[in-house]
Image (cartoon, rainbow, N blue to C red; front, side):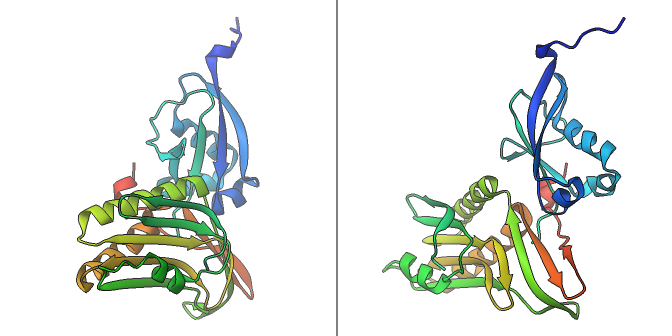
Length: 248
């Protein structure tokens, strides 16, 4: 005899898809009902059974539960938000999201407007700073000789800004710098435009260089931001890789 499934025997979760995964699934979000003992990994398995292309990506897809990275074995709870995240690719216009952390005054921001990093750096510079190092990633006109027309960036915004702040605050604690800023632009970007910037401020130059390098390296491998490259003859989501510390 088939036993009825009662309300308390299932969990209902919201599932988000980004970048290449959104293209495969054909939508950016959906709801899903699973047995009450289901895990985060079961969410991926559910969609992999429907979309075989996901199976080949399993080793490179990260899972997040309520905006925090989660192992596949993490139990689900009713109302959870689960995100399937492909490998990250790694203006002072209105910020979509921004965080300023005290007491240092570190700044983190996401925007869809052109980045004016020089102005931002001068606004954050303090009298006791003897140097600031400004790293800017800009859109180049080719990838391995294939002409690029423009780029599109998208991200899991609420999770991305939280991770940017976590990365920056940890770097500030580990290096003798006065403050740091991590900012990223989203949407369409033309050749030569700045997509991402890390600015580190310090009384002396070497700590600022070290902090800026660590900042961009961690941002590219830990923050869920994806890049689609548009060519004259097609388009492709740029494959990256997650930081080894996140691999489940």
